[in-house]
Amino acid sequence: MIQASKTDSQKTNGITSRLVTLAALFMAAFFLYLALRDLDWATFWQTLIHGQYQYLALTIPVSSANYFLRSLRWGFLVRSEKKIPHLSVFWANMVGYMGNSFLPARAGEVLRSVAISRNFGLSTSFTLATALTERIMDVIALVLFSCISLLSLNLLTGTFSSALIRVTLLALAGLVIVLCSPLLEKYFLRLIQHLPLPRNWIEQLSDQLTLFLQGMRTLQNGKRMTAFLAFTVIIWLFDSLIVILYTNIVSSVLSIPQALVLLSTLGLSSAIPSTPGYVGVYQFAAITVLVPFGFSKSIAIAFIIICQIANYLMVGFWGLLGLWILNRNKK
Image 1 (cartoon, rainbow, N blue to C red):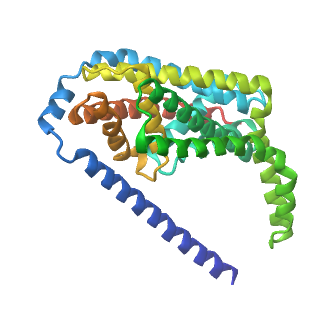
Image 2 (spheres, one colour):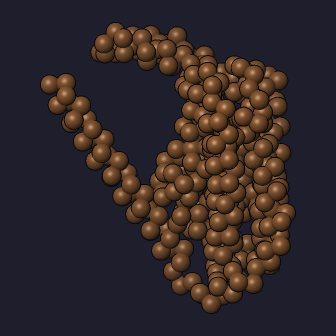
Image 3 (cartoon, helix red, strand yellow):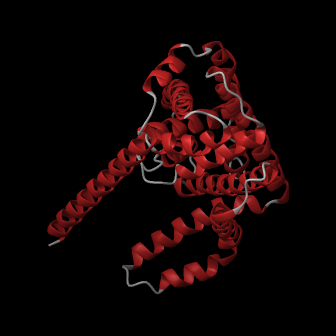
């Protein structure tokens, strides 16, 4: 009976996985169709062929430095439990970004959490909680940056304003969850005790929940929170400058507020189920933002493809190197 139950469960998981994959493929194809519909292919190819790729000599090292800043920020949370070398956090972080770029469902968050926990004896639940906490805080920051940027550009009007207000409320709800969930630990544990599960399952679930909330609790330290927020502002300003450098490749230019709006849209759109690398979703998001800012549709598509390819190569290089180094140094 137990074996039959396992087999049924595996079949159900397999069907669910296939349905999710099909849904992601459908979404990617749908958004890619919308993005490429009525595209001026001649202009698109000319933009790619005659791009000023010398700017990559600046964008690649600056982007790599910004990834290191991101690892330092995550380190504020992870290192609260155990002192881990900054470079090790960087390698694990790049393994995660590589996973997010080439695997579905943001699997990179799990990969970087496992990489740290296995190499330094931390709980995976704890490190995963810090990774998810970081991501939630990034979403909140993106929403706030987009609001400020849209206000400065006088674009916060009409239907878009209503939609942004709803997204802002969701982001603030996420902030409340991050800050308040650890305070409700005893209530969560009490609730678990009443679940109709075997006693050993309840004990394991309680232990994992405690470790997970411990990871979320890392931001309740005032100094740590201040440093985390300061790094978040610096990171996204750096990202906006990187976007501006990339636009120079296609002989266009954005202001910092416009770049922040683009980054916010790309960041929030990554939550949509999609294929690895957000193919289709990013193309649609790019033309949605850049065309109103004066880009032609062809140049907008060429721009986002250049960004994606350069980013794939960069995170692929650092991620594979990080995977090799962490495996070599595995304790």
